[in-house]
Length: 423
Ligand SMILES: [Zn+2]
Image (tube, rainbow, N blue to C red; front, side, top):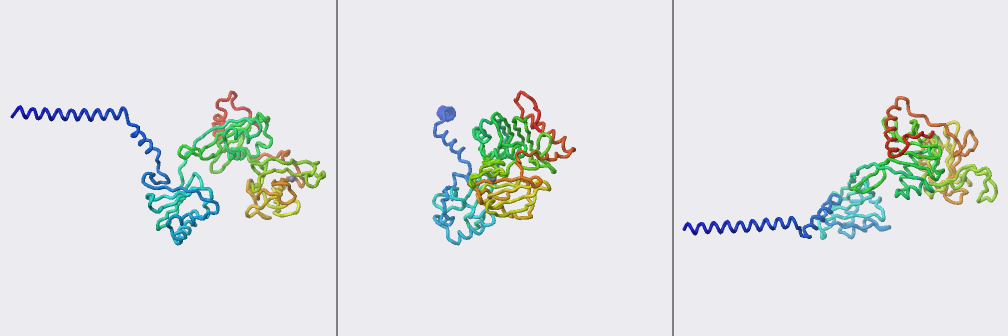
């Protein structure tokens, strides 16, 4: 009896040991030598992030591009939605994000529980920063959901070889950054007179979503170096001040902007002896022509009051603005006036007053920009305007500390330290 019991226990222990070794071996083998299938599964799971807040494993996604002249109703009808349901959706979307704002070429994403059921919501993404969620169930509720983005700082150093445009695009940047740079220097640097060898550096923000660059944020500081020296533009903001300031704490916008349109080129300069291309005789050109595409916004170059918003055969649609006692400006050949632009209205510097066109005597879309000083037409590009007032004395220490830390960043790695700023 005793022997048999011992044998039984021995067998039992033996069996357990074999099972244990077997399991351990299996475990170690798996660990050291994972099969390819296991690996793939892990990777696929990592990639499938929730889409618009819904897990991709448990939902069916249907993405389609809106075609030109296609109505939402046509799309919804291909799913099983009734006219009254579609009408209800359009009604509840009205005050949130109207279905009239859906644009051809953009995508609609329909989300359903599975491939057999009707979608319970529709997603439209007008830009990378937000998406619109149209609930297709009873409530037909519509909501705008903001995507979270992070801001990263970056720097850009460039040198002009042909134009500022070419220099930026060669560096892989977009026109919007040129736009922001023109804003930062405003009247301080004339970008129509850039020269080979001019250098610049920007410290700017980038908006990032899911590790991807989405758009440029603000420029924080910049310099532009040309034959006059180095111009600085520092972004400064508190309760009293907001904008770009030069080395001495004067707003870079100055009293007058250099040009009434962005992304333009000067197609004809101020010239008292010009040969007129249409009238075929010598007629002085008492303005500066900025060629830009039809519909480009035209800005008032300074604060002022509208003296005329009118039409004549030669000028086409034009606006004339009075800036204090001394100066007046005029903008010709507009395709149309901006909303609310009429005689007697006050305008701010940079405000859109109209749009580029070719009304009146014009060969192509451009703005003929005219400048009066004490009743006499002058070449504004040759005029030295009185500098804008600097910020108040008691503000300067704070501004200077921010300015100097920015200048250290801007000149990091350069051989010379803070070089003499241009005035
Ligand atoms: Zn002109």
